[in-house]
Length: 101
Image 1 (cartoon, rainbow, N blue to C red):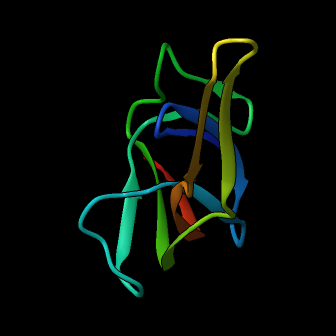
Image 2 (cartoon, rainbow, N blue to C red):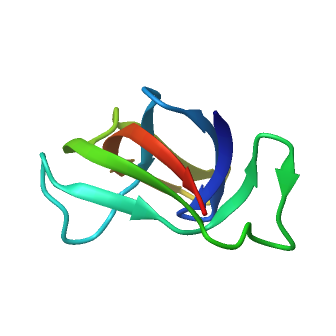
Image 3 (tube, one colour):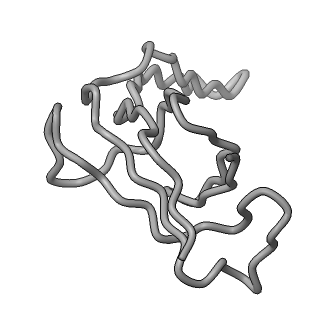
């Protein structure tokens, strides 16, 4: 069974056993269960906007930060230079089951 879920402002195409890196979920630790209620599609059933009675269960594998990116701002001839680093926090989730009622 396959589904499309929405979390963190993004949509993910998942099936059982899929491992996702999603935007950081607040107050969840490794080993805890997480439930995604915003299911946009399950197999051939499309929701308007969500499929009623459907949800996806997953387990948090770990929380972490992604690779560092460098944000560099520069204006020529103005002596303006700004260098800043950023590491985006994420939550690694393994999808356990897709439920449709």
